[in-house]
Image 1 (spheres, rainbow, N blue to C red):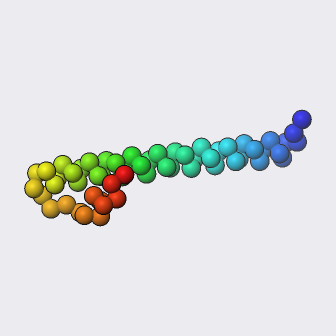
Image 2: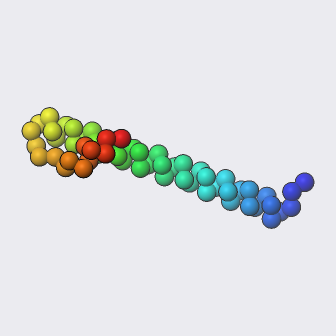
Image 3: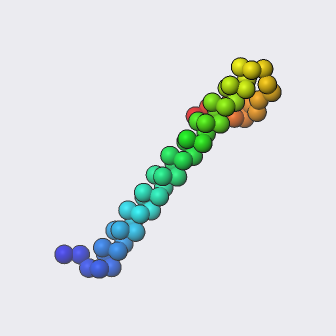
Length: 57
């Protein structure tokens, strides 16, 4: 059986991995939303930020 320190270390690693995964999902969602908004603005004939369209998630 693992020592309390080893168990804490494993739990800490799992928590960090979960947090990193959540951040990746949030960033991807934000990028996708921004890209879709810029596409709609482009269709309406508005000036768009080219960097947002170039990133295209």
